[in-house]
Image (tube, rainbow, N blue to C red; front, side, top):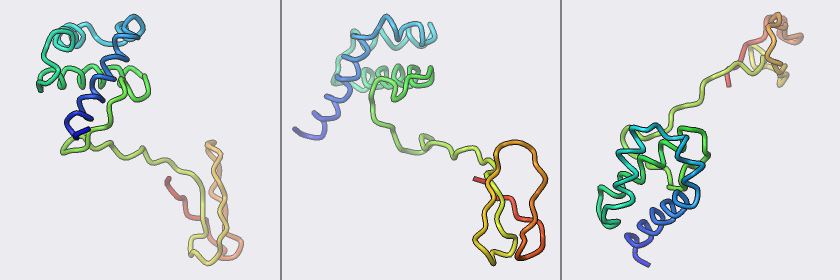
Length: 128
């Protein structure tokens, strides 16, 4: 199977999933997106870019609505499509001088910064 045929098969599988689950997926997608993309998916030539773009639009909308992996298309990686970095969060404290391997995990509650018993100073907060 050539790369183009394989890619087309992935999109066809996504449309098959959409059609099998249309009753559950339809309420998750905004009316504007559904009304512009679904008729293209239903009626356009599957060999065309317009059809693939419409499938991708529905995939993104379904994924944004909370369905993991949307319609099953692979993630696109290109300019502007890279996933954002996770939100940093404090996870614990370590020795301020890195002289020991002591780590004190933070449980999420506001607590007083612990002191490193070996270095004698306040431990350094580490962001995850």
